[in-house]
Image (cartoon, rainbow, N blue to C red; front, side, top):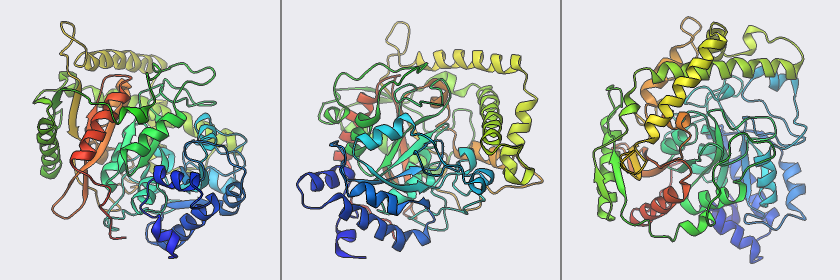
Length: 483
């Protein structure tokens, strides 16, 4: 690679934006450096599956908006994030083959463009974001830069592989059951799932569902800056988180004080957790205690509710059925069986057996679960008065590519396998709380293992304060994958 492509490869988005402001580099030079890295490195990763480099060059030549990330190259996840005039496949064969092109930006994408980002293409996602790996049949598997025999996780696995390998400094990501935090853990990145309603999902999606959007990054300051650039309600939003009291980037310098932190290093329902993941949580607990926090073994008892998985599956499968209806509308015809992956077709079929009453009951039970979990964070006497919950992000280290492969004979096998891999993340999509994965641990094989911190609803400020404190105490940005 050329000197600039290598010189800025490990600079975060905040630093690259500063280089543009100081006129040390131009937006076009940064973009060309990113394109050079993508073309040189991505063949071993298969992270960037849709590219509009010429269009990005035209944008980079300007004029660009004067924003916090003016001239910084980035990528969109190939899931729901429409960019006017560019294709979006959601990892689905029918959408790809029909050449469907977006007619408008989503609210978040419009805000990214206003912030000055130069968007150069799309990163891979599993079809409709349904499994915690990134191996859509239409694009093939994305590989983990730390070990290319392993998955980068999912569903934002393409984004995480691209950032971890230094192709771009930060990339758009989304999370409906852990899909920001899972790949952040697998790839050694920062992954914040914001509160439900923190960022508008307009104009087409609704904030009352399980999914939220933000990014994966290598530094806490990039995550905070990205959140500042895109947060806030949009027209007609049904859920809106309380506005921040100050910019999130300013929270990084605020002393979090002495916090009450509960630790859960075992599966809430009693299933096995890999020793490396449990060790990651215990080591993070010791680090938090060394930083002056009050750390104890405690967690919301409701997380062990044995009915949670069934309720979550009812909502997840119903969302899948709705998504397939929308794709059929976009392509203008019913979908053939071979145009939907087996696991997603099976989920949609399951949803068709769920009545409207069943769905309403799942929503009502979910509301009870949400309140029961939130109570742990509430002040006494109503609640337990904790500030943060610490868990492993995942139940296992990064898994081999192919672990979640479709099986026509057992189409729901990937979902069953996912339950052991992601025991700690889906609950906080159901509760709407913010949660962050931080790359504080490495396995004996050198694989990244993240830890998850969860705060009360609307308290991204607290998560970012503590994340910055831990980043200073145990830095990670100097770590480089072998790819």
